[in-house]
Length: 401
Ligand SMILES: Cc1cc2nc3c(=O)[nH]c(=O)nc-3n(C[C@H](O)[C@H](O)[C@H](O)COP(=O)(O)OP(=O)(O)OC[C@H]3O[C@@H](n4cnc5c(N)ncnc54)[C@H](O)[C@@H]3O)c2cc1C
Image (tube, rainbow, N blue to C red; front, side, top):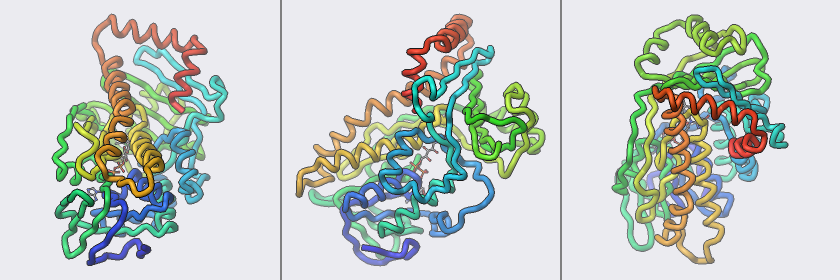
């Protein structure tokens, strides 16, 4: 079933899978299922002009960027979504250099684990455009400007009613509708929320010195500054700090902010020049109490929102889809993808990964934020020890990649 991606449909549609939410995770889910020969209908509340950035990619550098692991990149290549990426605007991460507030440094270099790289930095618009191209190439049915109204399930299927006359029925709904997921609410799945009282400021800089493909990160009490490598001596900044301090920084001019960041980063990259827009995001941690309900599965930020300090949020969401679609290949012919035992299998398989990411981000925040002299000493000592332990570093590097 192929429709023009921006077309609105007022009819009854049947599919194997409905994906609600055309963010990165929902797009990838629709592609992965379509590649398996399943019919997928992708629904997003945004109008086509917002939902289809493939049609309006800008030459300006996007302030929204992602650090993608090599496993994510390989998977997107397997989905044939990578050929649409403008690789001239993607930067490899060869090493990670981390400091604590006492200037103790830890360096993780891909060479120490015999890896070609640790990951890549890619702009949101570049990745979105590539995914949309593959959605269109695969002929996935897309309904934009969709206002979800009602979700009803029977023993055999689930039906999503949209405002207007459109109804879509399928065996399974994949909820990829982000942190305030409508589907999650309809399925009565509650969330556990942790308020970090932090804001992330995001902006790109042109740096005086070459970044040498190193992702740099400075940890301080309840604050993390990251300078991530982009092509042509550009770096992307993600500075997570208390909302109060962030509000002060957001009042500065681009020049003033650049000077603050250069100082905070001990002039590692020399002077900095702000490029383009400065954006800000409120940071919380949120985990759904369940990943499944009757013929519903949650993926991406609809299932879990984590602190960006580890650069793992969308990677984690992609891993949900990898798991779901990989399990789907093991279904027997005629076995129902929406049946409870299958969904339970998915939920069990994803619990550990999600829990360990939550622990990693809250644990790092606690370690570096602690006022305890003992914990500070242990952190300093640990970083020094780690930096000199080739075998442990190798494990950390493999985990990061
Ligand atoms: C500052 C910052 C930096 C980050 N850096 C990284 C990084 O380096 N690496 C990384 O892996 N992750 C990073 N993340 C996390 C990453 O941005 C998110 O995990 C990811 O974007 C979530 O994608 P998603 O598709 O699940 O949700 P979203 O991107 O939120 O997409 C949800 C989609 O659902 C649609 N939608 C919403 N409600 C409805 C509805 N009722 N009906 C229909 N459609 C609906 C929306 O229009 C949207 O298209 C970062 C996050 C922040 C804030």
